[in-house]
Length: 628
Ligand code: MSP
Image (cartoon, rainbow, N blue to C red; front, side, top):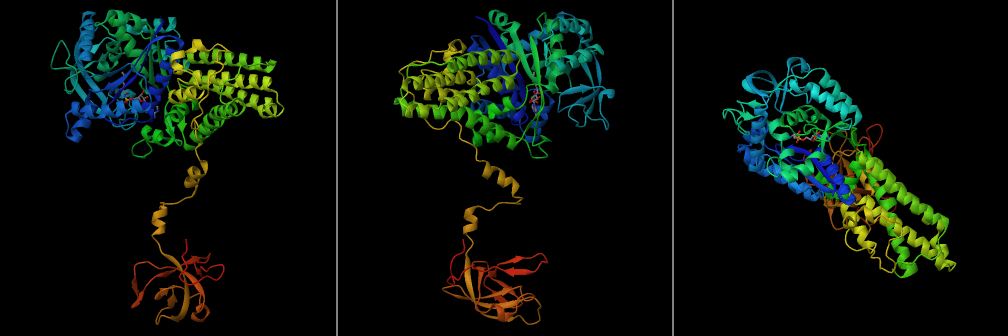
């Protein structure tokens, strides 16, 4: 059996997961599921990076031991992966014993290769990125070129790794393996970076205590990135399970964000060369998400919590959007409008609607039983070849991590099927009593839906499974795999099982209007109902002495008489108000105005000149009538 190994970065446990973490993990999950359905033996792993200064500081701030912090935060990641339907085969934490063993063993081997030597490191360090920088690499004001935060001066005894020794071998490896870094633009970037010359790098720290002890010298701990990268070996069984390692290592694919590409495409392959192990088959660097056009940051308060999106719109809508919206490798923007458009346009109106209308027709025309196709026409064969061609293209795109293009092809098949239904008009066929032709049309759409469901399942596993069940098919689409994509295999005579709509449309009206309303803060309907707004009849009115604006009104609110003071004297004379009906808020807290207790407030609009215009009912109503 062919094997396939795919990894995500292991995530720092100083913070809760956000859309960036979810993105790589979902992409890796989709690929793992796709490969399993292709028949590969897949190892898919994710995990957490728990050592280093960053975690140590975050824990200190909270008054916790770093391991305590890790134990708490790791649960956020694990539960999110369950919620996102992530099918990882392993989850590694760098504080686990199995990892410590492999890291120490790996270091022993690098030492034996003569690649580790003692020296002194003096330079800058960004704790946020856990990265060393030389003076010339910094951006103005001594800030980290990657994240823009202030860096710290470090001077300490350290052990170095002879990265420089591997410069030529790295270049040669890249020349011979043009797919080892993807996309191509990133390959070129990494290649030029190596050609500019590599310096040896520090791999141990003495000023940091939270890490794996360095085997040669226990006063040093291993630099967190060297510890972290080795996780990929630990999971594959390096030095512990030779068979597993030989099966998966040659086919390892690392998915990473563009910001951590150098660690994965320069330092990591050199470390592996030093260990006598092949460099990764592929490192794929994806882009970054902005949110509504802005960089995501805690200070802006625009960090997208995947949990919230899933609770609101469902897990599959989220998974689908992330992979459909942006070509893997490019930056993208997470905006509410784009999200709603994709989900409504492609999942609800296209695929979901096709499933729904087809099941309704099977019920209506064939009592819910899948008919045998009796009267084939050329267009049915055209649909069949389009379905097969769609899978061929989708597979080709998936081979190069073109998730968006694969989905585009799949959805195009769904659109074609919707059009096919419109063109063949099953309702008319039924009316005309053309049962034979009707059976072929319905069968063709059902078969198309089976193809679509199988191909979409890696992307939207939960909905794929639901669609499968609604189609009346046995088991799960995963179990059938892509080898089941042979046209004409939809079992005749089975019963479909229509269920709830697969993807309800997201109601754009409420969603978007809220945004457009320019409201500072909303009141709930319950809050509004607390206000007792009523129609009142003005019984008498007089000016409040020594004021220009105030009138004292006696009003009838049905079961009671009240006195209120209103600031309308500049515009209204007392006489013109008497006998008129106005709107008041009757349960406003009484207030004393110029010595008069006002037991309510009259409502008025403010005109262009800032003058009050009182509100009145359009027709006569009884005093005391409620205003709602
Ligand atoms: N612990 C290291 C990785 C070690 S792998 C041996 C690390 N962890 S992290 O928690 O900071 O995770 C970072 C991952 O999230 C990176 O792949 C990064 O590119 C990704 N993202 C962080 N913000 C992101 C966006 N706004 N958009 C997309 N991905 C982003 O680095």
